[in-house]
Length: 247
Image 1 (spheres, rainbow, N blue to C red):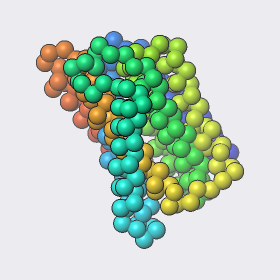
Image 2: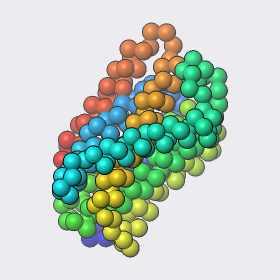
Image 3: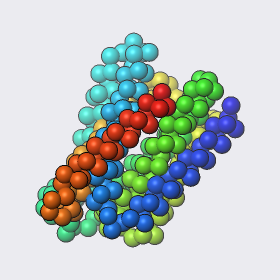
Image 4: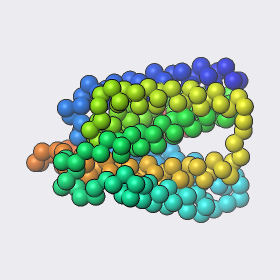
């Protein structure tokens, strides 16, 4: 039901925009948002992407090894891109003193690409059945709120201007709508979808664990680490609840 898929994808626009506006409003508490965001990313990988990878692999008679290779490749590819192309420092104690806006842009673009494929996922799920499409759409709408927060958080984290952060937020909000619309013209082979999910899980894992978490802790004051760990756990728990509710 193409029109239903497109209608639901517009709700992802609203959800993404609300998440990004929240990040802009509370930018003075960015380290708290970053700690929460890292937990959300971890939760998306552990409770959403990886189970989906193994389920799709199983339906193809595979054990998920290729997807795990794609995960490692995605992790290392983004690591290499950040270190050698973007010249981003790896020293935690220096994070607060170095501004690399282009790192935020590339990180945000990775999330925007994922949002596009989220929308495509809604459209492809409706190609299977209406019930599958609605279930996937609800999950995407719920976690796209965090995608908007993540996109703006990453831009602000790397000292980008507010106007540039808003532009990236707008692109992230529009991406799922365009993704859903694109499925009117194509179908994605399941084996390619497995590799995409594995690779993106690796990228997301790197951004959350190797980039956002260290910088959140570097920006927090003394004695705030326990609070940040709690927020990270809360973000992961939220994604667990969202995925379970949509199952």
